[in-house]
Length: 109
Image (cartoon, rainbow, N blue to C red; front, side, top):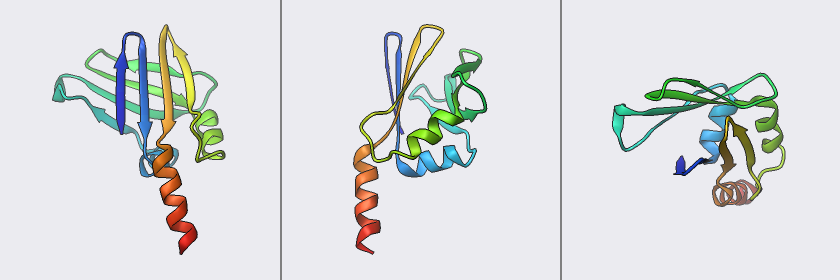
């Protein structure tokens, strides 16, 4: 998992295993280099809108299950998803190189 923070933008890129775990209901935990001083999680929710829950020390980015499932149907894809959560641009994508590599391995047998 890669997380990039820049000004009012957060980008999350996951690999295929992390994406599958998220679809299966696992909360993805993404501690930063600050260790336990700050913890960021991602989980799917039923609903139409993305949201942020929790505190500054431990927050969860809630992503709409419907949108994530739609992304799963078009992998591999360079186009991810974008959400605006109270002025924070959240970009979510699946590592396209990992997706292509896995599909090639699967097709080879």
